[in-house]
Length: 84
Image (cartoon, rainbow, N blue to C red):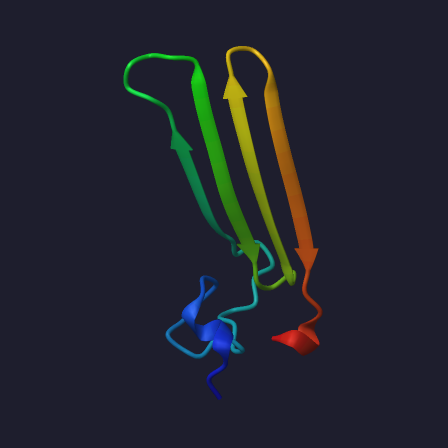
């Protein structure tokens, strides 16, 4: 059965999202994006998302550096199997 989650990341096979592939707990999908100006000014932005479907965990991060100070945020969400 298709769910709303089928439009998101996390697929291991062409099957619907609720069906995982081999069930390997190490299966991971990650996205990481870094942005910086091309003029060399001291600004750096990092954002990322990781999804571990067989562990029912999603994590993400965002960080910004302007000159020396860095501000970072990291978050993790556990998704019970009943929400799959």
